Length: 179
Image 1 (cartoon, rainbow, N blue to C red):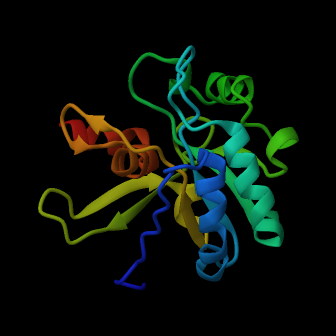
Image 2 (tube, rainbow, N blue to C red):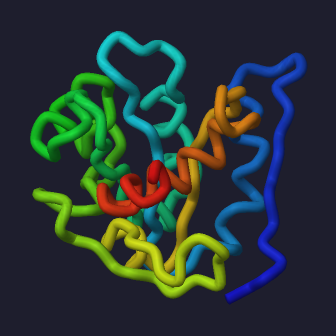
Image 3 (cartoon, helix red, strand yellow):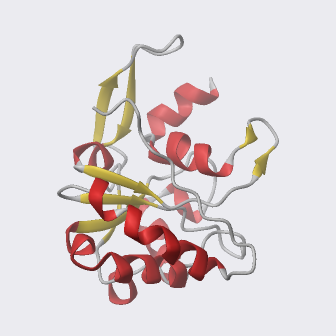
């Protein structure tokens, strides 16, 4: 595991979000290997602030052949929401344009149909010695996190960090973090 992971940033000054994203594409393919899990947030019903499926489709198209071994994913949530159960979660994703028809890659829920596709990952953390993550995310060879940046009441800058930590955790992992 490379302990010096790179974070790529593209400002949107005088550019659309799509233009800014497309500037990043040349630096991405070299680090992606094998099957790529593209972690997204499909948005809640009526939410307008999640990253759009149009923007993700542009990214996947620009990735070309690398995208052929990709899948788009999220995990189910704990709270009452369409995103708490796999079938309704996928229906919501489809309604927001996150579907194989548009993205040209499969869309799946990383912790499986009933939340049971979980891999416990050993950690050197203070609070957890191992942590349950969505199995599909764990088994992917590479992970591309497609996140928005936002402030979060409890965690300061939360959009990108929360999309990966809470969003990659199984339901059990989410319960552990909240406890």
